[in-house]
Amino acid sequence: MNTTVVTAQGAVRGLRRDGTTVFMNIPYAAPPTGAARFAAPRPHDPWDGVRDATGPGPTAPQAERTLGNVDMTPYFGPGWVPGEDFLTVNVWTPATSGPPLPVLVFVHGGGFVAGSTRSEIYDGGAFARDGVVLVTLNYRLGVAGFLDLPGAPANRGLLDVIAALRWVRRNIAAFGGDPDRVTLSGQSAGATIVAGVLAAPEAEGLFRRAITQSGSGLGAFTPEQAARVTHAAARALGVEPHAGAFEDIPDRRLVEVMSELPGIDLRTATHFDPLIGLSPFSLVLDRQPAEAVAAGRGGGVDLLVGTNTEEGNLYLAPFGNLSGSTAADVEAAAARSHPEPARLAETYRRSRPRASAGELRSAIMGDALFGVGSRRLADAHAGVTFRYSFAWRSNALDGELGATHAVELPFVFDVTGLPRLRGPRALLGPDEPPADLAARTHAAWVAFATTGDPGWDRYDTGRRATMRIDGKWSLVNDPRGEEFRAWP
Image (cartoon, rainbow, N blue to C red; front, side, top):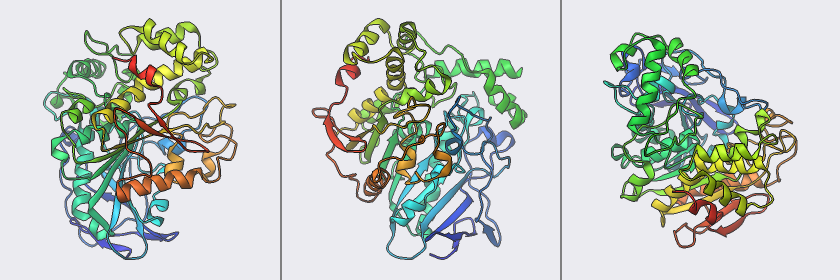
């Protein structure tokens, strides 16, 4: 692979690193500035000469994001690095030439308000080493990306992801990738976006496989819920709730106003808040992605879908709220998520008789956010889906972090050796993970991107085969079935 590649917009120069060729900060769409922040993405203008792609670029406007006593810097990255041209991709590809390779396009998480391609975890060197071209992308966040504004297209951050897929379709062959073997993958908010793209007719034909890591097929706001956020943002900014009134507001103020939006009650007569108050932004859809997929959208796409066994710990343990939870906290978590909270709480108590109040609270939160929506997406796509449950427990925070949200990412990217991931307050904790867990997890993702099969049985609604990923791997049937059947 040459370090200079010609794309449709112009030539880019990357660099050789550890047996791979890396290209960073390649634009896939025009800079979203001024009124364009609230428009659909547009093609980037061509450039003359060779564009330097040897270093990272700017990121989407975002506020600093922390999570209590756990260091999530490797996950969120450096935050907002100002610059207009941030709708970009990074590409890792083997340094040697050969037959066209499968492509994995990764969409980062961060609650729809944070994250970027500059995260340490999203290093694609291991994928390139193992014969997969890895593409990471930035997309618009927060107000610019997901506030539902009259006069502006909805879900602009999702439209950015589709624009990046179109860029991949047009250009990835020049980087050694096969445009007919593209896997779209994402984690957390990125996984919910992937579910939305899977259900979007305009994305048909742009990818062959999809992976959702701790996302939800039920994670979208209804237009009624989104309108509450829009009106709250407009009131806080002192403007009318339509796109024209937002066009002249500087990015800095749009970022600042996001801190004034949490706490909005999004429960309606017919719907609960799918993010249980953790973020005022999500996709905005008339029909949930899982429902659209059940009706036939994305029918030809292979799917790998999974969650971690203690997702909710990330929202409790770093704040001292796991060990400090009470029975009342369990009931409150159920009330935020379910029309019959007492029945839901009793189901979890019965299925987990030795669980503490904090463990029950975490389990209900994790399923409300990710578990139920992931299962519904898998059910909607049964027969062409593989399912996993990541169960390895981090000993961070004196063992309380556990198999929490995002803990699988260093294993998928095979970067568990990063120094910032290790320590008593780091994501992976102070202890050594099982020696082969990263290699085996990463290999399953490589196999799925390459062949459509991660190495275990397919999921169907009769058996619900699920690979439990831990120090030892085991294929189980219908894990936690009683709990999931309790949800509407």
